[in-house]
Length: 171
Image 1 (tube, helix red, strand yellow):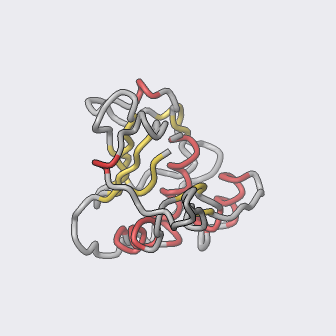
Image 2: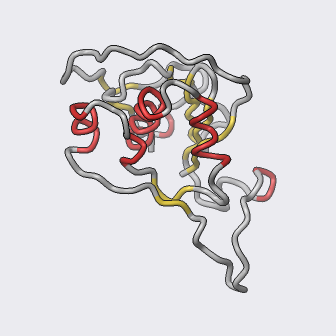
């Protein structure tokens, strides 16, 4: 759900990966054999403690991949391509695509494209979780911008290498 994943992904990009989308893609996509079970607070490494507390309520949990799972015949899992299955068959409701300019959020139950949330968006922003709100024709649906803390100063943007979008996680 966007209200859960977007704050972690935005904060990870801004702090842990120092605004380097290629480094973030390597961590979330290339360095994982199968996929993600849960994104954890380790993605907030390097973020200011007040931001981490605001996003997590002071709780901490690790990210967990699906890389340890095996198939019924004992063979290791392999990453599926988009053509191997459909979102409906896998009960996937959301897709997140990392672009140079931001995260495209796709409500897989409604569309094949979605609005792009700019990387500069404050991670404390509240996002709407209703799938129909994420139309590719409209801006990203925020419930309300966060007013709980003053805006943070953004680190200098790192030059991006390449511009190819890649899917980050699907839930």
